[in-house]
Image (tube, rainbow over all chains, first blue to last red; front, side, top):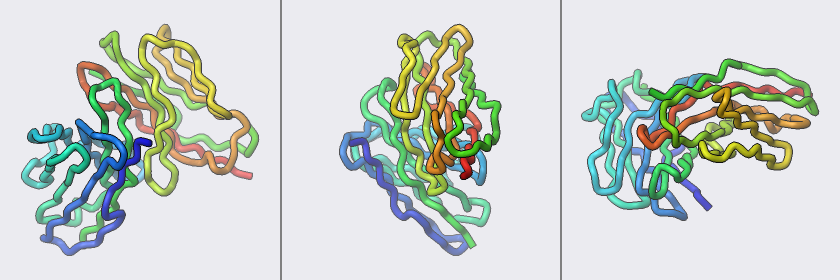
Length: 116
Length: 114
């Protein structure tokens, strides 16, 4: 149990285009989903927290107009990188958690984004 | 504020050696949860264990064991008889009722060689 999928696993795009990443909880209802960014050989940096049906809460320094998050159902959240630039190239990982902080966050396999 | 410190950046051991990964945390909350995750080269974070602040019992799962000591704010992870497949980055993380989100340590890269 507790499987989280992420799609696509890898994407290469041209500068200026938008990229959408999907995160799905396959066998449980995710009240809360999280989006992280990870630079090479670094720890995970939380970008935003989203609760189903609500607006996402962004961490300080993360541009909400740049990184659009939608959590329309209890099993799906999407992250859209708008007008991507080379500096947006990174490893993006989502996680999903059931009801309450006592629940564990389960992570997706990540998406490697390369913006040319 | 919450903080997790993993002082060991990289550890290299030979297969079958035991290895301990250190984790020290800081929080003012009395209720909190500690986690260990494994990140192999593929990138996915694999959940290993969760421990709440009221349960100081040590846990053993196969070759893995965890030592939780509130007195020293530590939650150390030991791999017994390490194997090459254990090579990965290991993250310790903290979640509190106040923050309701994970605070990660910087990770420890474990390299197990033959």
